[in-house]
Every structure is written in structure tokens, then in C-alpha cells.
Image (cartoon, rainbow, N blue to C red):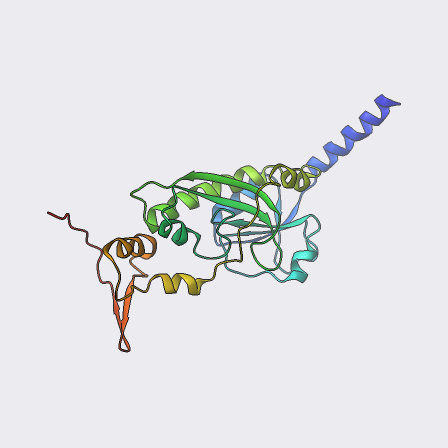
Length: 231
């Protein structure tokens, strides 16, 4: 009897592993599409009814609760920050707070955003010379690695339950940050110290979005980042 049960279980596992998952992927990243297809999964249109998975990767789209529940197995988001920084501007907050470590997070989607059960976390160092652009580069690199590793197991039975159990100790910290908080972080106070100014520049400056001073109805935007050695 034991042998028969084992054969039935083994056949079930083989059938499940051969099952072609139907996945709705919300992203602008072509490499993630190629990864899922290389694993034998089928990418379907957003209008597809009851896909096996809904996956969001580097997108600002907010998925409705109704759509999240339509996924047969689960709706998963790949977040560009560690659990201590839910929402927007994780890179900016970490640099402003002089963190020495950063990370990326995989989690189940829920409402409010970035509050769902955590499935995986990867950490990496923040170097003293890192700025917004260099930390974003590290973040994107590590997020893609995590995506590749995590999605390799999507067709394993009870995969999400196993990942939830493995990462149970990771919890989100506070409510999701909003873009308005980053906009406010870019504003340089009139009584700003040199140390504070350096923190603002390090954590918010990019060629497209620069720190600024607001005074008497005028907006003075930082034109060029140029740091000179003091003598």
C-alpha cells in the first residue's frame, strides 16, 4: 500500500511540474518576460480570467482587490526596497538615513499596498560613495536575481506556503511611503546645515530630479552637482 501511495504522489508531482502556468505579468522589463517563458510558463493578457499567478515587477500600477483575488494561486509583487521601507522612495529614505544595508522584497499583493505576507528578502551593502543612481543600479540588479530565483519554483506544490513559512519573521515597518514624502525631502530648508544639505543631495539628486529651495513664491532648483574639496 505504501508503495502504491508513493507512486500516486510521485505521478501527481510530475504532472504538476509539467503544468504550464498562466501568468499575468505587469512590467516594462523584457528580461522578466524572457525568464518566465524560459521556465515554460505562458504569459497571458491582463484580461485573462483567473490566471494562476499575477506578478508585478517594477510597476506603479495599483492592482484592485478584485483582480488580486482572481489569481488561482497568488498575486505577487517584487518591491524595490527592504521591509522597513514599504511604498515609494525606498532608495531615497535609505540614503537619507545613512543606512549601511539595503534590500529587495518579494511579497503577496494586498490592500493597502506593500502590506502582504513576505515571501523573500535579499540584502546587500550600501557603500559610503553610493548615491541615488548607483544604489538604484544595485537594487535593479538584485531584484532581477531574486525574480529569477523565486520564479524558478512557481510550479512547485505549496511553494508559496513554504516561502511564507521561511520568511515569517520579516514584517513590514509602518505604512507605505508616498511620493509626496520624497518631493518634500528634496526641499532644502533655509536654515539648512552643511551636513543636512549633503544628506539631501545624496538622497535625492538625479539629473532629472534635483534638490530645490522655495523662497517668497520662487523655486530655485539645483543646476549642477559639483563637490569641491575644502582647503
